[in-house]
Amino acid sequence: MTIPERFEFPSRKIRSYRDLIVWQKGMDLVVETYKLGQALPNEERYVLKDQMLRASISIPSNVAEGHGRMSKGEFLRYLGISRGSLHELETLFEVCQRVGYFDGSALSKARLLADEEGGMLWTLMEKLGARRWR
Image (cartoon, rainbow, N blue to C red; front, side, top):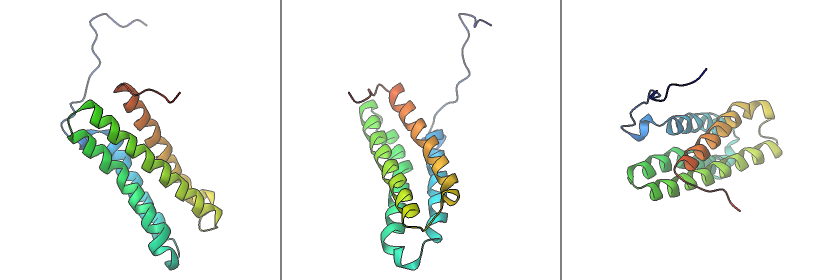
């Protein structure tokens, strides 16, 4: 099947950062992280739980802030910060599993969301002109 030369793919207008699927998925990851945080023991309330929540909240927050800067370079910079926070969160999930707070099945939904978020962040960064590390 060939696409006619003048064919245009339907596009959704992005009027706000809320229209970005990468922001929406990031918010889903925040909610899932809150659920996991509730299951941590009380002694981790001010350590792992708080750090997990800060990292998760940083992901969609930086997508929103970067979008609001209205500069491609600034948006890329904030998307990079989001990716860093995502990797921090994934590391905290791993810590929770290794110390025995969660098993792999308890983290499966959060890890799936994190994988999707990471892929979307990188794809958006590439579309905006980011280059892979050399």
